[in-house]
Image (cartoon, one colour):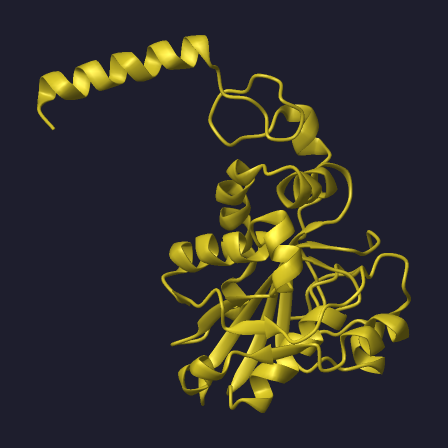
Length: 249
């Protein structure tokens, strides 16, 4: 692009900003930059940091002892994956953003969410890892028109320089909505519900897999996906969620 074209492009961009100013992702009020949050929504966004459970990413009280720590839940019910992290708590602005992406077609949320996910994923990175989203059943995908976890997985894989395989996993059968179900019911509902797409099995043999989902509650869905990957020869599984259902420490 020539210098003159660059100048004109800058002027056009400035004019567009005057007519269409950047809006807060959370509330829609004007903000200083694209894909940002206003001060109030930022305060209501519970980013997860400090000491967390090494397996599920839930925040824990206390200082980091310099070695992996597990929450009571993961000690009582060890998950089938090696490590897990989440970027946000599923409350306040974090919950609103997840629901807006999932049910409101707010795809512009993916870009900043991918940055938050990439930061949270640093302890999970393995050489040669394959990134894969938790799948939707084809009927739900047809109705919704997109898989929000696949959008997040693609974006975070691009940020981290990893391979993204959006159709690595399949929903072998349609399962009911899990809202309102307890831990045991969720795990029972999802047993054998997720499988590896046969044509992708050679891709993950002896390779690590990073599973991506929008929300982790009990970990039942991610457990089903992790077991499917391990049964097909994956060397190790890590999990990454945009939001974690948990209480503040």
